Image (tube, rainbow, N blue to C red; front, side):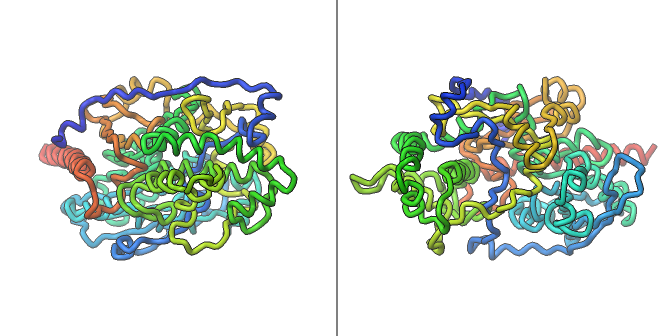
Length: 515
């Protein structure tokens, strides 16, 4: 396949199931008791740990950690305390302001920026080709970029958390890069944005909101359409389910049957004790809901990181981890119970290294993290699970229950339509055709978030690169000897497009200067 062919429009048919509306009686029969209020899976697993594979340990990226004091509220003139925003910077290959060397800015996600820096090898690898500076600014309220002096104070209540929004984060990036360019006399240097997942959403939105700050954006696995009434709410879990079904129908069916088996066991006398033993939990299980959520999370993240080689972005995992999970589930001896099979499979995700002797279901007992806040305010992504197409328990998104949960946790009422009001989403094709340019939306169809992204070319300059075998922002990850040909070609196409943006910008500048 020629690299050019990746730019052709691709029509994607999403296989969806029937949406079920529950009565209180039908809800009572489900394995968990508040699925209708469930939030979308986080982009990052709460059980993730920054453990590196041998290959990743060999990859060393040089950077300086610096701090820039940001306004707490960019959109008012209140005299609020500033906070230090951390950013990582490397100028080893930068051509400098005289030659208008480009600046590659990665839009920081919902986590420690160093974690994203070491998992975004693509930016580091292509920077020397362009003579580019590399810049990784951290997202406010994550990592070391904490307002109010500490995480405890920043996360104290709804008042202190109120400045944790995508709009404020984008303003941080815009102010930081503008100030940095001014200090380096690099005002004429073009800025190219990069981002994966939530960071990809930010990169696309920043290109639209601040076109005078950045000339283009590579938005990888960016579900900017995963909001109210844009894509079917069952899309995410249908894709996860299809990822398992493509590996093994029997594996898919075992997982589908396991939810009822889990509920049935939990209702027995000493059933929770038995489940604690079956799943090797460190503490006695308090409810089947806790265990179901733990399993649900693992399946979702396995679909996200179903990479063709070993990785440790979420957890230490083998290549094609879903295949390995299904081998474990299907390969158990005859007579093995459904739940014992599930434990064997899920251990691939939670304990591939074999180092753990028991499992903690929750490593954030307070439940007060930044993404939960964002999901309860503006990042409202409706999710449901269909009866036929999904291997998960059937449930329908219920906004009233969702709102109630957010009020109980944070004392706030979500604004499900605000993000699409601020950045667009409804009729995205018209909006991007009219106002957008120089944006790459890259997606792999194994990634459940791909269903909420842009999967067709919008114009000559807003393009979709879609790969059937790709998982969550795999194109941004470091290159490896195991990279398949389609991935190599995809990255070559991205480099070609970025070069076109920069060449076009420099040509315009040269023409303007000569005049």
